[in-house]
Each structure stands twice: as structure tokens, then as C-alpha cells.
Image 1 (cartoon, rainbow, N blue to C red):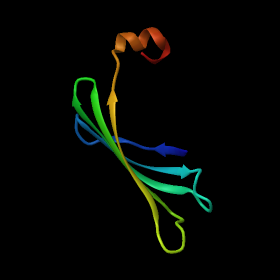
Image 2: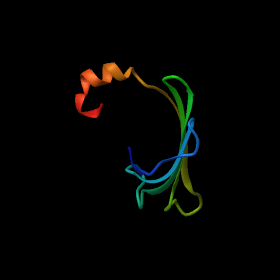
Image 3: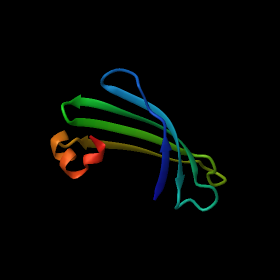
Length: 88
């Protein structure tokens, strides 16, 4: 499990970039990570996201990192307003 905290800023109307910190619970010594992430708007409700985590305390002879790629679909705002009226 990885816990994350991130700050994001918009580079253009289609691209959001941001740094962050994370914590990997499966890393024995120190699971603190530095993160870089980006989200790109493909079209309409579709987004593609990627992030890279570098863990500050690896094991003696190697480093620990991960790279993730995700796909996102945003549901209709009207549907979200019925489920979570406080967020609209």
C-alpha cells in the first residue's frame, strides 16, 4: 500500500503536472518516497495518468522505485451531483 500527498498545477488545458510525497508500507526501513505525476486529458471524460515514485531509503546495493500508468473515466457531472450534492 502506498500513501500519497501531492500538489498539482495546470500546465495547459489538457495537462496537469505536480510533485508529491508518498509512503510505501511494504518497504521495511524507510518507505518515504518523492513523486512526480501527470494527468493528460485525452478527450471528453477520458484521462491518462502516470506517476513515478522514488523511495529515499533503498536496500544496500540497489534503489527502490515504481512507475505507474492509469486510465481514468469521469462520470457525468449530473450523476455526481445526485450522489454527492455538496461537491457541485
